[in-house]
Length: 297
Image (cartoon, rainbow, N blue to C red; front, side, top):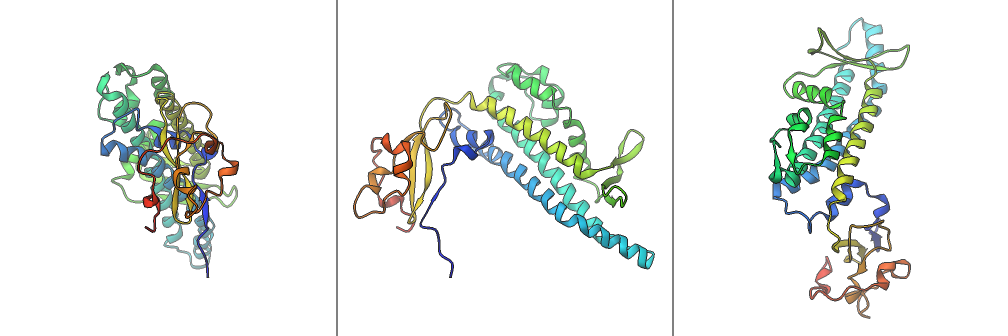
């Protein structure tokens, strides 16, 4: 019978990206409405879903040979495996765009109130960043201008929202998977991506770099104030500390807040305290640190 681990760590800043850091520390600096908070959560959530979908597509990729075998044997194939793969690829495209859309919503929540010309449109934000004046930083305008990949991604998203599934074909010579959609045009010809997986991986790198640059800038705007962070769990109880987002964060950062209850002899101790620099900097009691932090109470 499996058992639940007695303790585990949640505070791992060495594993955080720029999006993760902003998501954990924005609250003292900004007042986001609930829709803006959902958008911030959506940046990472949609990007992660796109990654999972592409990984699934890679696992389905070998099934294309079943369609080829069926065609060679029977002279016909309904290409069900190709349809499945195309569906997954298109879903990943939509998720990736949603991550960008959520990012622009976060930028609008941060800079919109003081920025003239910041319209409620992701497309116009990318197409006309020079029109955003007053408070919108030039550094972010440069990122928008440099996102040369956005135009194609936006057109794919717009068309895929309303069209049927496209087609994929395995080139047996090169082993590349070609994606095409006769309902979409690039110039006068139907949309064709000769190696859709190579294109996707390149696009992922470009989008990831863009998101990293945007949220790196936003992280530099955060106030130097301690923020409540969950460190981990021990016997169903929450370990926590208070950490400022400024500087190079490590597992030793911040000041311990959970000491107020885990030092009591009747409670489980923190198994990480002897290796944690935060424990040497105990935060003053806040008045709520009791066994109410136990999830099983």
